[in-house]
Length: 107
Image 1 (tube, rainbow, N blue to C red):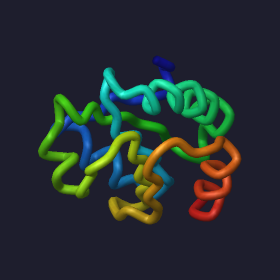
Image 2 (image 1 turned 60 degrees about the vertical axis):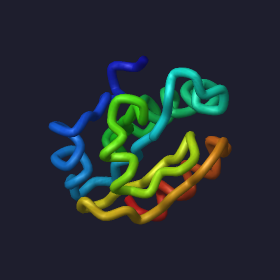
Image 3 (image 1 turned 90 degrees about the vertical axis):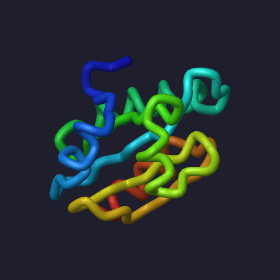
């Protein structure tokens, strides 16, 4: 995993997503095929859009309370936060261009 992508848990989640800058959070699990497929796209975004958006991950197996709080029922689910509020939700595999478009709408 990229050094630019934070792994969040119950102690770091709320502080991280409270940022005024956009934070894209990937809800994933190690056994999830589509989660593995989108991981390289998120790594590229973490590098290419550094300073515009922060990328973070939440392992749903280890953090079920966070997943339940945001009604994550399928993975991968990507939630884009700004100021602690969800401004976009993407469920399932999506393209890099679609993610860039959604992020840029909230920068």
